[in-house]
Image (cartoon, rainbow, N blue to C red):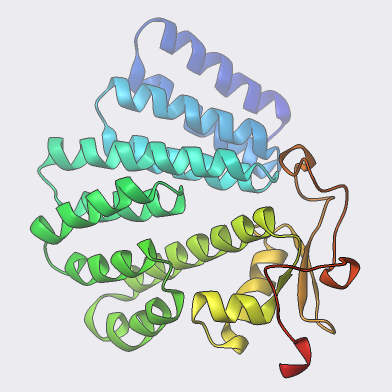
Length: 277
């Protein structure tokens, strides 16, 4: 499939959209998004998913609207636009609320809660967790407990809950979905920490997340490899530092390059002895 095919999808989608033919426009924008994704033009792919969302909303096809926004957010991640990821997930959470109301499916509240946590809107997430706790059915009740843990960033407890409870209570597909949200929320937490602190150590992340060191390092390394954590891991010092080649430096106005804690006269908040690791 050539670039011209992706452009053709978009052109046809625009024409259908102008005529108010939202079903056709939605499907063609999704086709364009998938076409651009295969070419690894992730920004263009994300924008097409977002256009598909617009037409899905006009159709009141709220579940599909949420789904394509999640895909759009994931595509933005590939280009390091983590703010766009969070915005798209927040929008998806809102779409799931509408889906729950239209389809009389309270389980959508649970999906919306995970999206809101991933998007960083903890207030909305807690409201949706409460709504889900009152109304969710089946295996979604177990997911409510996990969502509640993750609104408090209790990653250690959350990981144990997935491994020791969810695996015995729900389907493999549901476990995979829970693991995916856990991973996205965890990597978002690490990104936020990197934005707010001059240097981040594995030891400090172990203390703040409650995860065992081996599992935490595994998740961090995966996050770095997949582009969800824009950092470099110095295994000798046990530090994570911002990788300025993979992060929009405009969002880090006070930082002109990676900073190691040993480069600082006063590391301040850390007050940690790395030799204790």
